[in-house]
Length: 313
Image (cartoon, rainbow, N blue to C red):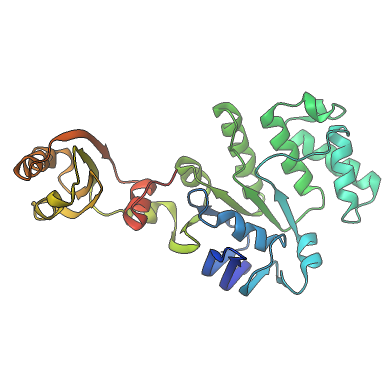
């Protein structure tokens, strides 16, 4: 499979704060692939998409999209991509179809052709009845569909979506998932940022887990879940610093890893909840009383926790 996107040693440092948003990022996205960038807010996902869509200039490294370098030929890249922002930003003074025609004109699409394409897209996305409505008459989910239609009017090779379902109700989110699946079936290359586990698992062929600008893991959702250590994560919150319990917990049979952060002890256990009595006993032996216990089964969330020591969302 040929590459739709390639980054090599990509780096972005924001000045004057010297915040490193992306640190030596190497990625390859194949033609026709549905690729996800998974990570919490501030992980570097939006900056990565910003560079790939030419809105942000990299500090170092190289990024190539649809065969074109984003730094040396940004205009050519923009003709080959469609972008759906995190929050809909249509022109509210125009009707739905006028938004599409106006946007397509930036890419040299004749008005009649833009109107034809726009009508087809609205039909395919289930909002053809809103063709002549003003944007404010659309629900949040309908506005996001409009943003997808707008991004597709010039028939781009690669579609970028930045947290596309943030703020949508569950029904609208599921509806949008179906639209994205259909676009993927048509052979479209899609790159999506998200911090929703289920969304990443349901839609993406492959996922890159990113945190603090670094690539932590890259594989299919199934293979990433298989990399989660232990069968269960057991979080035990004590009434005081848990570091005095960590050593004893780590030595228990069936525990692969134990780490303390303040009063919380995090244990990766192959024995699942069976380990809890032993953890309580270890705490009592070290003068600690249990205040709370939480169990998490293997998932992308548990993998992320094992890599970073914190939750994804």
